[in-house]
Length: 392
Image (cartoon, rainbow, N blue to C red; front, side):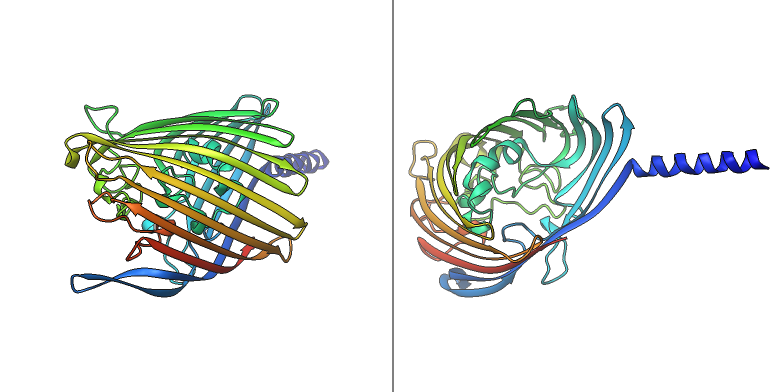
C-alpha cells in the first residue's frame, strides 16, 4: 500500500511539472476615443459635399482594440509548440474587426526554437510589418490611423494580413533578425496564382535600428479571403478611396521599404523610404502604377510618463501609362502626446493634417484621406483623436 501511495505521489509531481511547462495567456487591448474629422465626404444626390464629423472609434487608435489567446508548450531542448489566436473588436458595436473575420488579426500554430528560430503556419503579419514597421514613423512616433501613410499603401500600419502563410523568423543573432514567408494560393493547376512571398531583416545595436523588407503578391484582389487586398472573410478591399481604387484590376502588387532610427537621450528620430507598385492593371492596358513614400519622425520623452512625437510623410504617385492618371502627391503632418496613468492604462491626443494635389486613380482631382477613414470632399483634411487605452 505504501509503494502504491509513493508511486501516486511521484506521478502527481511529474504531472504538475509537465503542466508548469505549458502556458496559455489571455490578453487584450481596449483603445477607445472620440474622433473629429474636419471634412468627411457625403454624397447628396450626385453631388459630393463635405462636412464635419464626430465619431466614437475603437479601431483607429494607437493599437486597434483586440483580445487574444497565446500559448506555448515546452517540448524540451529549447523547442516549443506555440500558437496565437487574436481577434479585432469594434467596442462600440460589439462586431468583429477585420471585415468580420473571427480571428482576423492573427491565427497561427508552429514550432519555436531558441537556437534555430520559429516556423509558424496560418494567418500572419507580412515581413514589411515585422521588419519595416518598427523603422517607419508608425513604429516609434505613433501608430494611430492619423499617422498612417496615405492609403497605407505599403502596409506599414498593418491594414492587411497574409492568409495561408508559412513563415520563418530567425532568433536574435547579435542584434540581427531576419525572416521570410510564402503564402499559398491553393489554386489547382496554378501553383503561384493568388499567392505571394515576402522577406525582411532588421539590425539593432545600442541606439541604432535598421530595417528592410519586401513583399510580392499575385492576384491581390481575388475572391473573398483569397487575395492580399481581399484577405478578410467579407472580401472588403483596402482599394476603396480615390487614391488607389482605380487600380483594383491589378494582377500583382509589390512593395519594399528601407530605413532606420536612432535614439539619443530622451529623443528618437528616424527616416524611411518605401516603393509600392500595382502591376499589370487590366483597366490601364497592362500598365503599372508606382508610388514612392518618404517619412521622418521625432519622439521626445519628457518624463517616464509623458512623451510627444512629430511625424511628416510625403507620398508621390507617378503617371500611369504616360497619362496624367494617378499623377498625385500628398503631404501629411501628424502629432501625438501620450500620458501614462499606470502600467496598463494611458491617455493620448493625436492630430493630423493632410494636403493632396494632382490627379487621382480615377482621373479626377486628388482628394485627402487620412488613415483610410474616408475621402475628403476636397484636397484638405484634418483629424483629431482623444483616447483612453487599457491593456490586460
